Length: 193
Image (cartoon, rainbow, N blue to C red; front, top):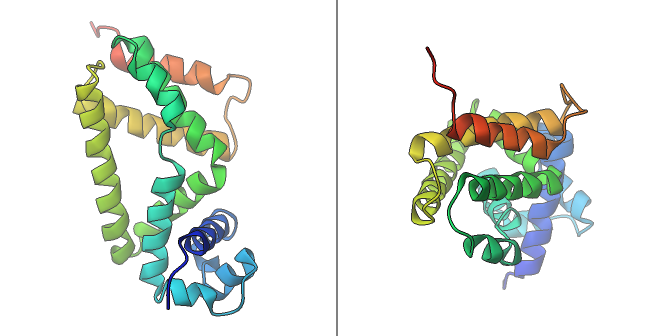
């Protein structure tokens, strides 16, 4: 049976919505079919096993969160600086917040990975690959910071997103203000006496 790439994406998007709203226990082939409004059995034709579903969702997360060339081309034309680094971080955070169902699904997959080794292996490999690509991008662009700083930003952004997508501890502070403070604090930490 020929596979329709658009249908596969629609099914994966339905799976991501389910993960975001119902959690990992709500992610079944039948639930994906219902969420995507397709005939019963469609999801299992595209994703034979639960592992195939998870792999398809991870792939779709990458597609949905990919950088927008129209945003990145003007940034790439600027000279490297902490401000440019901050602009890239703001773009990442904006993409993750604009795709809240995808981001919440990713958090759900990370939680499920803590309980299920097969998901840990799939998701862990994908995350480590993306992290390495982020470090390579940062170094190639001449941006401040190396592997350690990029890792610190990943940790900080994950916390910021969890805060903003669940229950913000300080809803009156704008997300951009938080990102600017993170950039200033992580790239220019005060000397400790």
